[in-house]
Length: 267
Image (cartoon, rainbow, N blue to C red; front, top):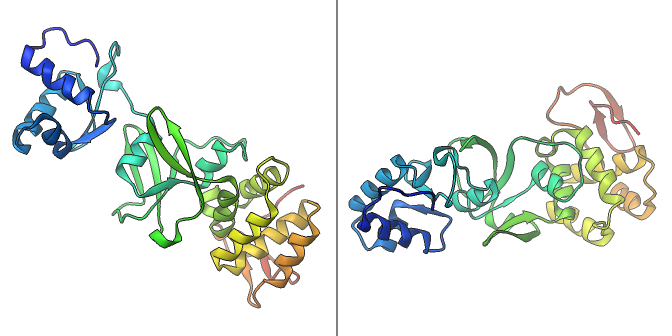
């Protein structure tokens, strides 16, 4: 907790109970259970503690304890991945955020991309000044993830190979096809590369456009992977797909990959 000068004995005990609960973030219901109080009373205490700067409110009804010695407790922010894990769970960090984490892109994105199985009214939510971009995913379609420890919270993030497949499936979540090209190139030159896992995950997507985009990028960027390119060629669909669905659907048709090349990627 932060400096709590002037706090009474009872309030000190209650704050200590919240601090020792092991929860980074807690709701009014959580606090009521921890403190052994009716929900109405717990809500009043939390609001009071937040006003005094002993707690920080994430959003209505959700709070975090402010660490001891915090200079400006009202401006204290929890780690965004911990917040995502608490608010959007079941979820995992993916898209451009996962690409950043695994070193697959040099681009720096200000928002956090989250796959979640929960329905939210808005696809973009701002919490403590951090923007979260959400994509709904069915529980059975959650991809291959890896647990990453942040303090004592284990957050889930798409593993490097799943990250590549996710952004090929939906280029918007990778920041557009140019960024995705960078991600693919870096993946194939990294220790994360696994050709067998890559093609397994692509098949699991059941989206033929992924084969088209992957094969086209590998050929265009002169990445020597003939077996993967051949597998992609054998699995493309007859109709044309758009290279980058996020931008205007115009440009030349590539008959080999059945792609409309509506964006230029450079070697």
